[in-house]
Image 1: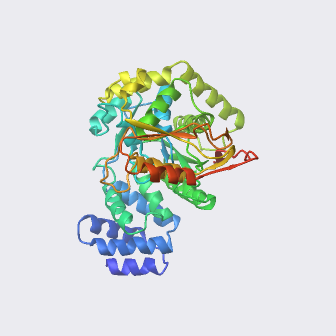
Image 2: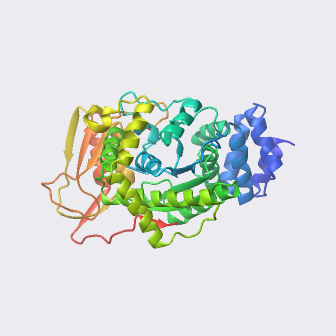
Image 3: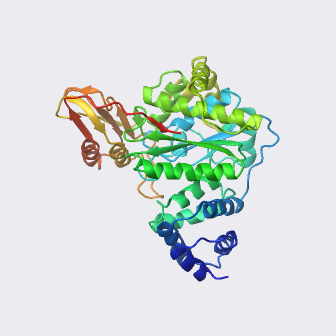
Length: 443
């Protein structure tokens, strides 16, 4: 068997066997296949795609390249949630303690942000002292004792994915749906979970810009998860404007703390409660070994009500405090959010018009936050945890030139003018309010 023949076969659109894919991954990891041949293979996949069988096989090989966590000694259901990334998407940090308060265990291995999408790990690291580089032993201990833990990816989990992603990042092959699906699912399935809820974002601030691609990615990942024995569903949510009222790591943590104490903007509440309801439903399916079907509306409402009760009673907030303490952060930050670093400068952003905001482009808002220091253009860039944007107005709101549409928080002035121009270029106003868009698009 030769790498050349496998590359040529995929280039010509033929289906590869599991044995051929196994040879390719194994030989690449051992250093026998060079980067230039693997890059050629990735480009062939980008143009020719993969069948479901190929994608499942590739995911399994990436999964088996490292350790798979074992939580069989914990009787409670283990369910995780994963988002494909969006602007202001802070739902994981609210959902994990919320589900733990419902006695659902959440082992979460999360990522850092690249570009305009902030990563869960970056957000959490804005809490003074907080650590995400826990050992697997500490990770498992926290899940057992608190109900959840969130850590950064270790070298033990899906090392093939880590190596392949580095190549995809520099060879313009990141956007391939089979490669995205295999990358996400190999890490998630390594967590030892019985159920998984996927939040697939679609729109201007998402990786998937159109609904057809979002549905294709969602179905591919759901198929992989269920074929590997993990009960998996995907929810497609709108990402045309930022989620919630903040964009930027420390600012988003402050919003999460506020949300866990019962104060959430409507769009963030809708996404959190919908994802949480499905996590609760999937957990019940895992416990009962039942199949997943459409969740009836009255059951969805019941779960949402139970979740809101856990927030209002303070149970979810209490779990968050325990979590911060267990991961070496300062738990006082939950009670005194001012402990979380604040930027030295703020600037009110106004628009020279009055009317209804008809559009607030999520990608432009994310790019502006990145220019302020909240994101990375390159992997080696340092993130300013205090930088970001607070949104005073959003799509559908009425605004006048006297009112700030947003407040920029920053320390470095060098790109403030560019950030303002980018942000404002994504806002359109008009005399008529826009039609209200559904934030939950499909399941």
